[in-house]
Length: 491
Image 1 (cartoon, rainbow, N blue to C red):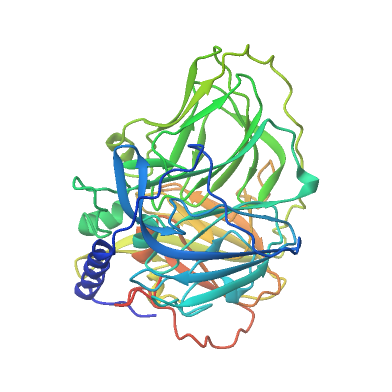
Image 2: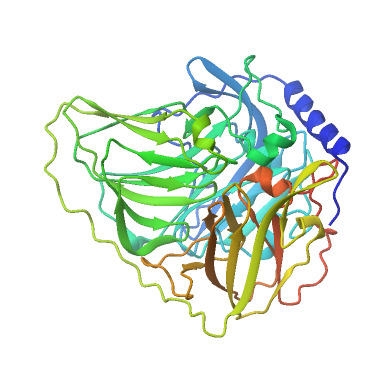
């Protein structure tokens, strides 16, 4: 893997933004009929065991609030892209077309796909060129909330709006609730003239900080509303698709009952009045908001310190306004009991993998490293089919890093290697600044090179990424993984 001089990268980004601005104008895509309702992908296959859709990446003018229309990079013209629904064991076929001015791919974040479907150029597929097509075809083996996004110049393309959600249902896990909602959290950076902020804004300092947009969105809207009866029990499935921002959620001291995370339901629920969701993470909760009939309640995001006192630079954001109906509040009712049998992984005999995250300056530029090397100089971590590894990730940087492992779930463990209760499957784990986190992962027979990286995407682009080489995969027919290239065919 090789880097590209900063001047070439700057030219690439400038060209990308220029092309975005030059895109042919189209009518603004308005919000769905309900402010919180996501547009859904249309299944064209009558076979109940197959979900087959068409998905197009293209620029579109999108109204995020009545006074703000932006030209974003979208899937099917929406922000976020269409919600894809499937059931466990379904075959998902996605006929993908790229109508963007840059190459791109689709990565299925959290889904245990075959390596050829993972969407990483130079590792699992060739980047899809402008005007090109690629068919993603795989079985969805797990229930849960997942999401999709590019793995080409991810910080830029995700920042411009390319995200979408995927819900995989298991009929055996149905939970009786008044409503089941998918809530996509994101942000976008908009300049005073209404155009999108260049992805290299702030230069080197912006990269180290991890760029956040000042327009915070819920399902593509600024502070949408939700009408419900006070005391109704609902299921809210959150996914944080922002490229850097953490969401620390509160709702006037009311409780969230957490029933699931990245890999679906947890072994047992947990309660709290605050949710912290790092970039890339998901959280599945039951809520029963209370308040006066006809009154309002606001879901807010509090400033969160993910490094260098970053919370001091953010205000409280109103994310979602709940409008209670005039009906009397429902009496408090017991929530559905959720559980899941999860077999704990054992650290006995596990291979020890120690990763140290650092930040250095090389030739006047900031560079994130794992064990002393950025991703374009790093050697893959070897793994064998059936092997269990114990990863210890020590963060020696003054910024937190949500670390994501492609293709596999893991269990977070304590210093003794014991899984932390309640048992849960994760694929993205926040490693706070100056702290250490550990997890156990067991590799199955899907040989290939699987990425791991910080999901603050500016950090990943600046070197905080690596690979696991599982088994003895043949050399990639797509060439080596390139991090920064003039065509954007790296991550």
